[in-house]
Image (cartoon, rainbow, N blue to C red; front, side, top):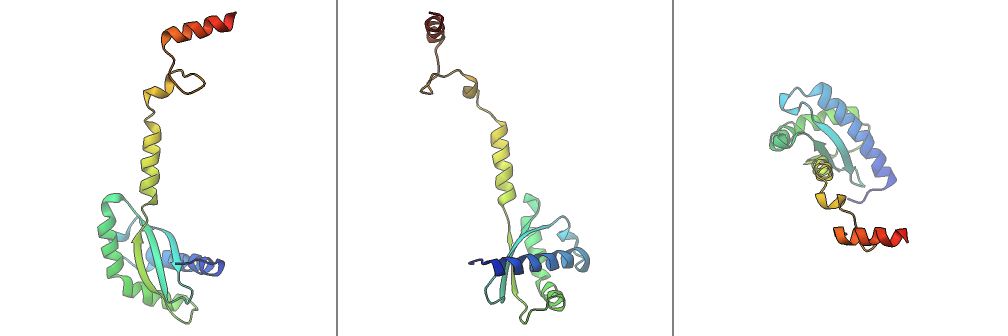
Amino acid sequence: MKQTPMTRRLGEQLREKLGYILLFEISDPRLELVTLTGVEVSQDRSFARVFVSCEGDRYEEVLEALNTAKGRIRSLLARSLDWRVTPELAFKIDRSTDEAEAISRALENVPATLSVEKDEFGYPLVPDERAQEEGVDEQ
């Protein structure tokens, strides 16, 4: 969905209302430790895509719980919003935290080749070449 400054502001408003509803109004234990990471609202406010994040092994369980409670969430949302139309909700899992975790794990595993001395072209120096270069530097 194309996002404009207006739809971004509406998305933030909707995210705050949904967060309150999920925290205080819906009492499903499957929705514990679920984070709303973002909301995209259509131009006419009739549709909203809600991105949620949770532990990786609970994706299916959380989506099922959200889709089961979708009608109740939408009716509570209609009472708290002052919009003419209550948007249809589509819940999606936000996997960006998984990708960030994979990148940080990859950065922790530094390959041994990074600690090898290299010449100005990026080629590793062989012990003979090191001695020659040190000898050249001394002259």
